[in-house]
Amino acid sequence: MDSHAAIVGAQLRAVREAAAVSLAALAGQIPFSKSALAYYETGERIPTTDVIAWYERRFGDLQDPVATLLNLGRADVERRAFLRAGYSTALSGSVLLPHWFRHTPTRAPATRTGTRHVGEADVAAVREVADVFSRMDQRLGGGHGRTAVAQYLTNDVTHYLNGSFTSDAVRREMFSASAELAYLAGWMAFDNNEHAIAQRYLAASTKLATEADDAPLTGHVLRAMAHQAIDLGHPELGLQLAEDSVSGSRYTHACPRERALLKVVHAKALSAAGRRAESAKALLQAEQDLAAVSGDDEPRRVFFFGEASLAHETACALRDSGNLTAAEEQFELSVEKRNTKGFKRTHAVTLGYLGTVQAKRGELEQACATWTSSLDAMDGVLSGRTRNVARDIRATVTPYLGQRIDGINEIAERATQYLTTNGI
Image (tube, one colour):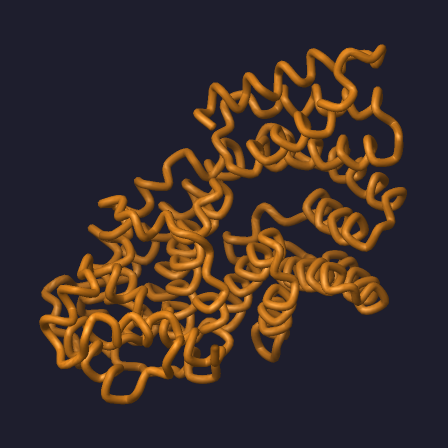
């Protein structure tokens, strides 16, 4: 199967499914059979320019960021089944194509027909909503409030984007703010293990960020897509996305805190790909970038990234490279440095990872004590990543149940209870 065909086919399928049109229905509307369309959408055949043109006549410009966001938001709010399907490497890979970031400034104020006049106060409102839900995500997990974010994107933000802007600067700021909110919707879905939804929001966010001419934000979103790909076992794709995130002005125009975030995920991607020496170099650069932080003129989206986050991601990279001793030290540093009240979800995950590393090093009783703290921190958190930690705890301790290891049975029971309570 041609990889380019698979990527374009994934885009065709995404736009059709977002519009709630079946293959059979589409075949009745355009001059291609259902079987032929299926071949194009799965990448078995390379979609021709004629096929793409018919899709665009039916569903609109495949590259239009506002239409993409509107269709995606509606599909999400209506909980259409296709968004619960599996993660598509082809769809995430599509953002790596040169044409994906083609800047098409079609949203200049003079060309808009919308009746809503959009000014700086509207931009501030969108940013405030993003900030509120981002902080909620850090405390309570992506399972809390994600539908509300999707509804706000669909019902309010798309109207702003189709409005008449008071200036081109306001237009760019609104697209940037909307990209951040779309990114947040994707990140919350990622945290809640809704990976098909997550990748679609993240891909849509890159389009909005490009329309805003906001290179650092584009890098920020690509970094999240890299994180997702790595976590789902696609190290090569993760590395490609991470390398794109630190390419050119996406990295050089970012503030020091954001550069540190981009670099540490790049290091994680290098480690997952088995490139340990390069990973170590990237980790050092991330440390240097964070040390250069002054706190001035930073975008709100990076509020969460500090010493604790750097140590957590560093630990993950070291763990993936097989250096469990150093990974344990960095996870412990992350726990020590974190504001546990404001970042409860991440604190629970870090403790869970730390316990697993301790168990792998033969420190099972210490691991049980650490997992106890992790499960304590999970109280009230609705997150796929905390559920993953609970599953990992249960799987790790199961072979040792009944042995004289302090706390082992209680830990297994608590992990099971957390999963039961969260409906998983």
